[in-house]
Structures are given as structure tokens and as C-alpha cells.
Amino acid sequence: MRRTEQKRKMANLVEATTNQQFENFLAKAGKCLTVVHFQAAWAPQCGQMNDVMAELAKEHAHTTFVKLEAEAVPEVSEKYEINSVPTFLFFKAGEKVDRMDGAHAPELTKKVERLAVAGGPVGAAESSATDINQRLKKLINAAPCMLFMKGSSQEPRCGFSRQIVALLKEHSIQFSSFDILSDEEVRQELKTYSNWPTYPQLYANGELVGGLDIVKELAESGELENTCPKAVTLEHRLKTIINQSPVMVFMKGNKEAAKCGFSRQTLEILNSTGVDYDTFDILQDEEVRQGLKTYSNWPTYPQLYVKGDLIGGLDILKELKESGDLVSVLKGES
Figure 1 (cartoon, rainbow, N blue to C red):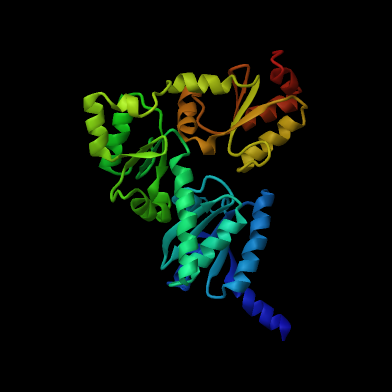
Figure 2 (cartoon, helix red, strand yellow):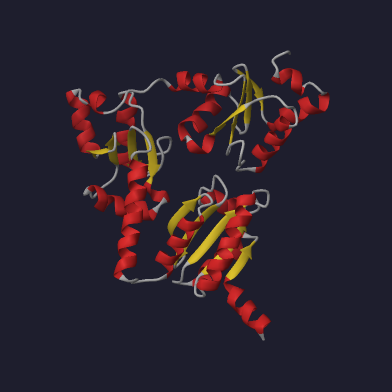
């Protein structure tokens, strides 16, 4: 009898291996919360978060927890812009209501508790408000000049966002951006936090500058450059990063935690040589991620550079290893 009860309790912890299964789980859940874990078998942090999900599934019987191998269902991962694992998406009535990137067990627990229970006690609401305000403050201060917009600086998704990005680039303003379409909680709560009801919103040194109209006025008066930090050229920035180390790898993740299979294989090959190298996580910098592909004329990642020169990607590394030339190339001897 205990076995039957345990099985019934865990019936809300499932695995989707196809797009159709994924859609079926969303449809079946209806208005109840569905938590989808985009994972990878090679990433140990995903296994740890699966253990957290299993415990949460016991506590939240009306919430469906779905494990999904990100690289096995590329159409789903591409649709929801999954760039690293673990990533969690939260759905209600078939619509995405929140997102969490990374292995953060306490944050996952808080999000599930907040989204699974409607109309919680006042104390819980106050705690949730404190959490989101702290998160917004961190995002606003993530860069000296921070733009909250629809889409990215490379692909704006509304006319106002497109215009403000063009203005900032025209005036050589160094800025980072956050896509509010990727996070409904940020999109709604930032309007209250800033007391500014529309997007885009531009912040400089943690303070709200304003929206498109304000930025236009500052640009026309010549004050924009004094309000926001000036940018170095992207080419200069890329050259600086490439030459940070004699052997430099641009990849998804870092030495401690690769975030895609190709990057993981690259690290394994490099670690086997005993040669020192540095890495740059392209998932943390969209400007570098897109710009380097053009600069190097190499469309994929990872990318390996030795003494400032491009060697190539994973296939090139494999060929060099098989031919016995890899160590000499990494040491700049050939």
C-alpha cells in the first residue's frame, strides 16, 4: 500500500522526450502550475536540481514537474531561447509566466511556492515583494548603463526598443540590455519599482534615466554622453578579450561548468594537454557572442584562439589531437 501511495505522490514528476509530450503535459495541467526543467545528462548540476524537484513534487501535488533533455528536443529549446542548463520555465494555462536560469535551489523553491499558491498570506506576499525588489536592484546595477527592452540589442522586438538602441549606438554609449519578454515577473514588477509604466527603460549607474522620449531629449541637447558611459569599439573589446591569455576559449559556460556538449568536449581535450588556458562565457555577454562570429568569420562555438589567432572549433581540436599537433599548436610552436 505504501508503494501505491508513493507512486501516486510522484505521478506529478514526469519526463518529456518529444515536443508532443511536452505540449500534452502543458495542456493536461490546465491552469495549474507546470515547472519544466531543461536539463542535460552530462551536467551534474541538473541531477542535483532534479533531486530538488522530486522533493517539491511531494509537497505540491497539483503542480506538474517536467524533466526535458534540452539537446534532445531542439525545437522546444529554440522556441524558448534555452541557452544553458539547467533552465526552468514556469507555465500556467499553457502560457509562460516566469523563468529561472541556473542551479539555484532556494530560488526554485520560492518561485514554486509563489506561483503554485494563489492568494497566499500577507507575510508571504511581503517576502516575495522583497525578493523581487532585490533581484531588480541587481539587474539594474548589472552594468553602468542598463537598458530594459523588448528583445535584445541585436534583435529589438518593438519600434521603441529599436529606436533607443539606435540612439545609444549612434552616440557610442556602452550599455547592456535585459529582454523583458523573457521574464514576466521582471516585466511587471519593474514598472512599479521604477514608477515608470512603459518600456524601454534606461538606467545609468543604478538610477532611472527614462524612456525613449527622455533619451531623445538628452541626445538632442548633447547631454546623453555625460549621462551614460562612452563605449569602446566592439572590435577593440574583442581583441582585448582574445589576447587576455595566450590560449583563449570562447564557450558556453566556464572551466568549472560547461553548458553544452561541444564546450564540455573542448574542455576535456584541453585539460588532457596540460597547457594553461582561459575561457570566456559567451552566454554572459550577447554583444561578444554575436560580434565574435562576424569578427572571426566562424559561425559556431566554442572558438579557440592561440596568441590572438583563431585556431577553430571542436572539430579542428579533434583533428589536431589525432595528428599529435595539438600541444605544439597550443604552445604557439607551429
